[in-house]
Image 1: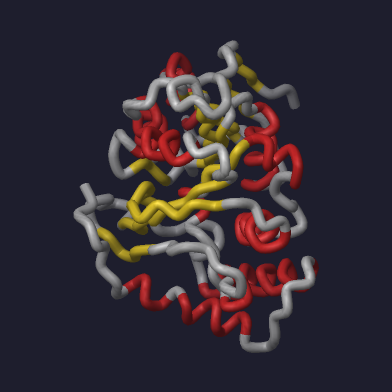
Image 2: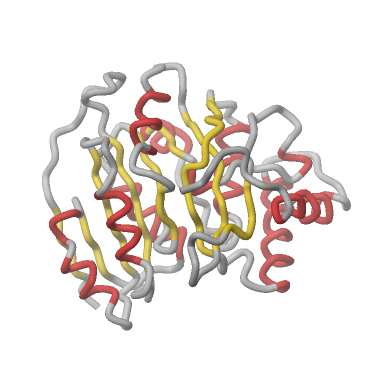
Length: 275
C-alpha cells in the first residue's frame, strides 16, 4: 500500500544558539479524529517559532487524515501509511526529523501553555545538556480541565531506575545527535519502549539531563500502557525484561515497586496552577 507523504523544506538551525535552534516535534496518530486537532493547534500556537512538526499517521480510517490535510500548512511533514505500532511510527518520525532537538507529542496530548517550547530551547542553550524533561498531568478524556493524575518527574539519580522511576516521556526532549549515537526506540518492547529508551540514555549511556520543575504536558487518560489491568501487567513485565537486557540489577520486587510508585500520582496535587 502506498502511503501519503507531504513534505516541506526547512533550513537547519545553528546548534547551540537559542534563536536558531530548531525543535522537531513528532506526533504519531491512528484513528484520533476527536483529539488530533487539539494536538496540532497546541504545537502551532507555541510562541517559539523555529519548529518542525512531523505527523506520522498509521493509515487512519476514521476521518483523522481529513483533519490532518486541513491543517497541512501547519505541518513540516505528514506521512500516512501502515506501521508496526506506536514506537515504529515514532522511529519513522525521528528518522525524518532535521531539528537540533527532538520531542514527541502524542495525538491525545497537548502542551499546557504556549511557552513550553521556549522553555525547552532555553534549557538546551546550555550545550552540556543532552536531554531535558518536566512534569505532566493526566486529564479526563472528555473534560481536559479535570486533572486525574499528576506525574512529577523529579531529577534523575543513579539507582532510581531499579526502583521503577522514569521521567514523564511525553516531556522528554533529546538532542538529535543522541538518537544518532545511541539509537531510537527498541521495538522488542511494544508497551514500554519509552521506559527502555529513557533507561538506556540516562542509566546506561549516562547522558547529561536536566529536570525542569514545570508542567509541560496534558495527557488524556487511556494510553496503551495504562488502559487496563492486563495492559499494566504486560507493560511492567516488559520493563523488567528491559532492565535485565541492559544488566540493570532488578529483583522480584521490581514490578510491584514500580506499580505502587505510581499510586501517589493519583492523590498528589500540582504545586502550580495548571491552565
